[in-house]
Length: 318
Image 1: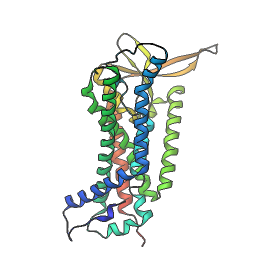
Image 2: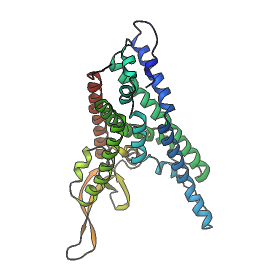
Image 3: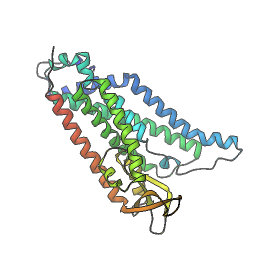
Image 4: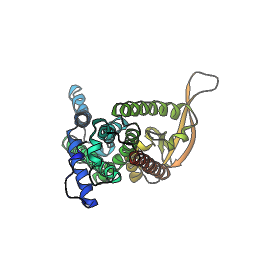
């Protein structure tokens, strides 16, 4: 959308073609009401996260303690926001061109479909990166103002990169659906259904079955594990090990490089109704993080190839 305004001579260089695609796609992205709505919602949620403890402490007449690890502890956008940013950014990048008919004008320009797709993905990367940097700067400033000086802020760039990688797993998925269906509504509805099914199904499989290992190779929140040190395991320190939570795993690995992740299931004590936790297996956090990174990159490459193949071989009817 908006990429039909390509100008230039008869044989523009590939870099010029790519720059034109990126420029107009960026202009289109920042004008999307849905994208702006999700960005505003993200800022509202971040604001509530910052201010809620302040409000509660005021109501209860309790002094607000300084929290030097507040920002780094609360980093990571979470499953829903990552998915929504991916959805609103690319859901009509390809399908919208076919629905509006602008694909016909676009393909009359001296530019290949591969360059078009690459330009759209670079524009999506820039758009998402800019949004995430704004959110993290806002969180850091708010954390310092409310909770005092913050520690480990040098990890924030890694958090941003982790969230971008997590987002692009879903963005690649949405883009592939759009390239195949050429229908924005169908792409959006299908993506939402699959996300919700993965989110709900993952929680059930991770907690109530012994098949959590399957979740390591699916997009989403993944299996739920618990960080374990050499001396003890605290069940409160849970961690999701899927592609949606790469930033949090990066932080935990940086702070606790020798930590392990233990997976459990909820069962029932034999002969009684009381619930119990059963340990399934334990893995090094380094292995969990490495596997999640490999799975995320694999999905991005595979789904991008599907998008490229579907777009390149699409029939355009005037």
